[in-house]
Image (cartoon, rainbow, N blue to C red; front, side, top):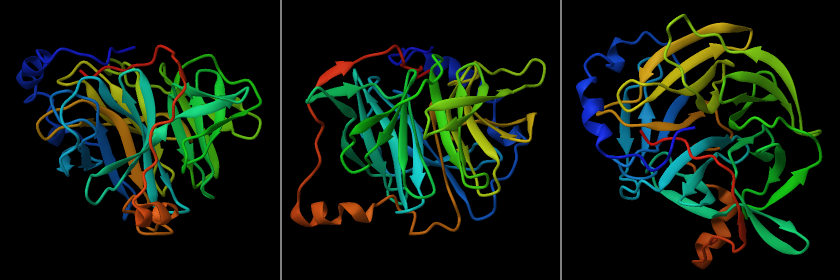
Length: 315
């Protein structure tokens, strides 16, 4: 695992290798026409939760909005798009807490839904969620360790799904609209189909990278409308976060697009929004309209934090 609180001194080394790691030199795949790709930061050299639009074939990234100020205790994790509402969500790791955030991809402005929690014996207990995914009907799920939960996108409440998941840490979790199924990747690139009703995993095999490829772990998974899989992969180049793609039908088909860069920065939270969404893909969920009108906000809920070791690096 990579430590979240990384030293800013690494930035100098990243700049030295920028020329050799230029995303313009990459020959990645194209995103399905009409779809759009974004990434959220996990790097103290750029604003926290800074949103970027991404050129999928090169990983060249362009900032949207201004983020929330630099802080090495903040990191964005696995995002998910809700095709039922047009809203986009992501995990917000803030120090020792895990929040559910909503992001407007037009303005880059985030809204905190609340700290993720479940209810045990009538008490609220916070959960250190590793990944989230949303199905075609808007049903949302979250994974923490070997546990699968349903996720209420309005309140951030988690409800356990009875079953046995893998003990491996799963940060990469997504729904594929082409197959109508959920998939997950462990940190060592083992791919699974996820049964969200039974909370079980079906192994599909490991991703295979070309000999000598620099691939140290993955922290997000997305599918475009053609069913192509897109993943963030850690490496040792520059700030350390790269974009890869692969086909479900061929786990040897991994293709590198480049490291996320304009000026280089580390990110692990990749988001893909389809070109033909049900609603406008601004990230603003109509379900929250009554709260906006009343001037109310959903705040982080109190509870006893249930912690697991899970902070990827901000390089």
